[in-house]
Length: 265
Image 1: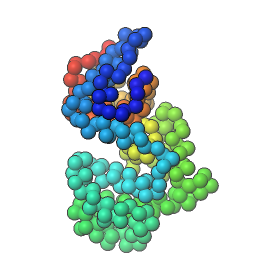
Image 2 (image 1 turned 180 degrees about the vertical axis):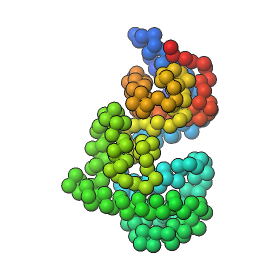
Image 3 (image 1 turned 60 degrees about the vertical axis):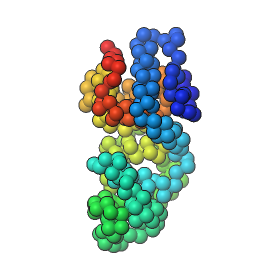
Image 4 (image 1 turned 45 degrees about the vertical axis):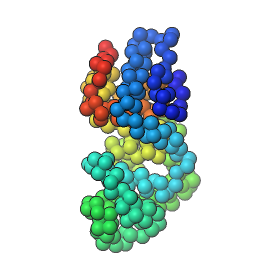
């Protein structure tokens, strides 16, 4: 079982392969390889994995929910580095995602969305409108779920489901929440960014797993991906969200390849 990340050096040689089967040892070897390789090529992975390790759904606020919703809406279809460049101005245009302030904009939806585009410099009217509508939806959901303890309590209950339950129920969760710009795939990203221990079935993760023959092909079902992620998590001691982050970054920097030619039969 691995220790939690505390320093970059802990990313090397952290798995003990003794008393393990040959296949499990190969998986350990793979995980050690990508940890070492990814750290060398992308040192920022340490902070990113710490971010997900330190997320706790119990600490979320309505402002945080709107912030993460907006981040996912804006990054959908755009490169991370482009949105990151505009993000400070986007936050300012949305009054730093104060839910009440943003929800009030819905009375003049298009006018306010145009203002946001102008002030932020990110000229995508639909994304701005969706984020305003999502602020209003957060308030509605918090009221509708009052008998459960509000929206935060709803997410806490969600976080207590096991991985397979979460994966199977994800499309229904997206339909129930009805957030603009959040669909059957982005709902995974949203849950992960709230501190729920889940993966996003991203193409980079899928291709790495397929190239390693841990799944048959990159279009494997989400439940198949779920089984592999659960297995990798159980033998490594890594949270699903940390493991997902590692595979995603590794896929990006290797163009979804496998640098050491590791293959599992």
